[in-house]
Length: 144
Image (tube, rainbow, N blue to C red):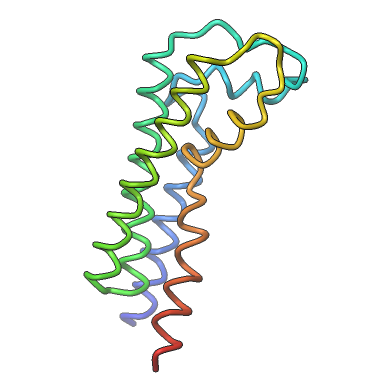
């Protein structure tokens, strides 16, 4: 019964990640959502409020991180893994957010926004969770 409850809670947290993604248009200011759906390779960046964009990106990263850490906790129940994950999320956020901000403020209007696309993708999607889960699983169960 306890294992079933654990699975239900993990599914609920995963559903929160889906909810964040499904309602991204209404929850966060991000004019780049629609920009990257079009032919962004040859278009200039849209006019945007960079402070609101950065705030929305940071908030979305924070929400994804909290839910991701909850999922990691429910799977492994290990404080050391959570501490390491929190440190990793913090360092990666600082690095990717600085790169994102640099690209936004120095971007040319000539197009070719591949780097911006991928840096932003790491900030707004829970990709770190998809990387960390198998890594922690392998680490934890390899040592047995």
